[in-house]
Amino acid sequence: MSEFEKLRVVTWYEFMKHIRRKRLYVILGLTFIAEIAVLILLPVLMDKYPDNVMAMAAMLTVGPSLATIGAVFFAGDAIAGEFESKTGFILFTNPVRRITLITGKYLASCAAVILLVIFGYVITAISLLAIYGEVPVEMYKSFGLCLLFAGSVLSVTFFFSSISKGSMGATVITLVFIMVISGIIESVLMMAGKPYWFILSAGGDSVALVYGGMELFMEGMIPAGGMSMIPFEFKTPAIELFAYSMTGYMVVCFVLSLWISRRRQLA
Amino acid sequence: MSESIIIENLTKYYGKFLALDSLSLRVEENENIGLLGPNGAGKSTTLKILCGLIRASSGTAHIDGVNVAEKPEQALSRIGTIVETPEFYSYLTPEETLMYLGRIRGMKGNRLKKRIKEVIELVRLEEWGRVRIEKFSRGMKQRLGLAQALLHDPPVLILDEPGLGLDPRGVVEFRAIIEEVGKEKTVFFASHQLTEVTQICNQVAIIDHGKLLAYDSVAQLEAQYKSLEQAYLELTGGTFERI
View 1: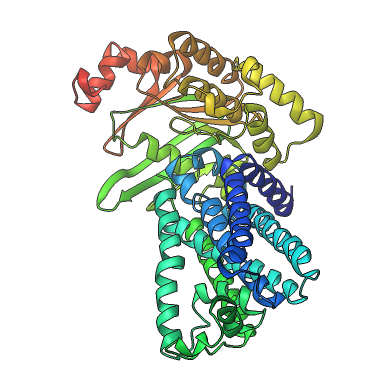
View 2: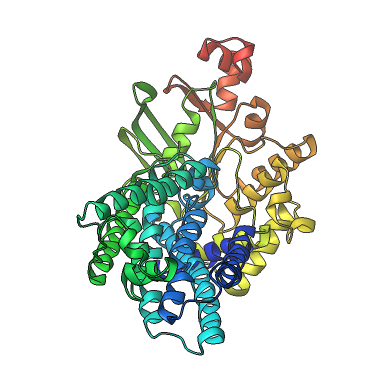
């Protein structure tokens, strides 16, 4: 039996895990509630929806948050869980390369996160169609960047999962790294007018930036002339830079997680 | 007759702790050998090295002539294992678990389905075949552990305390199964239960502090020390509490 066939089997059974877990459906439910909240609160608080469909599309973009939450909750236990719950004693004693097992887990987590992201984009597209009668073509670009971001967050999660003793530790470390540490560094660099495209959380921001940059997004939120109140100037880097950065995170962290997992012993 | 398991100068350090100290052991094909020793003697470490779960600091381990460290997949294809209390994915049923493990071992189709049915019946889990494992007791997981170890009909069985967590009836049934399948397989069996070892194994290896203290037939050890229990106590220099 080829390693590729084994990979197919591992991916399918790992995907089954995500499908059977409640967390997938909880995240889907929360996504739905978040999107509905935006659709209800905007006209209530601002009297109307933004005039620009691009600004509205940016506001409805929940893909990066979904990708982060999905990746962390689906993949946090992918490697650490095998060691913590000792299921590895059954799995790792089969004639399958550790690389195949970890890659199968990665692909299954990708599939589950893609499901979440598609769900978020379908809601956004339907909402925009209902309100504006159109869907901006930039949504495809945003979707592609969101998938890239999901892949990079998954790789980072796999990396932390490969070095953590427990699933909870891996999940918390990844969330803190992406949402707190990366977020803070990104904000500081942005305010200082320094390049910030290489920060992972900035990759998530790029998913909405394709609709027209930070200025458009802020104008959708702040009353006319309000942008002058912001004490610093937004400089949006080229989208390609974010894509390169996310690809880097995705490849490097995944390869590292494979290397560490191969060497890790189950004592 | 060839040797199924060859362990040569196996040494394992956990940090500064020496778990195995140049352990050497050769197990003939179709021989059933019990690995005895007090807690921390190095039994589980030996089995985990044979299963490719941990690496030896030095020395080699071969299964059916295949070096476990150099060709782990090839070596693992020849063994069925139970290491510690087996844990399974709680979201799967026993049938799905065995289907998964069988498929990654290259089994498929009706042959796999038939074999799954056979091993589930063998370990008496027929009524639980389609129930998710999250509802299983420790003893039931142990039964499923034996089922997955036998699924691909391996020539070598490596079992670490397989009777752990079973009720008295389960222990008796378990011993009978291993005794039966052991007639045509090499069984390498770590246990604290001397009666279990004498029932299943014809050879015994006693280790302590990672060193091999004795390796002989049960009959020979009983003749030399009056009983296996006495042999164990004298060789490990312990008291009954250490057993």
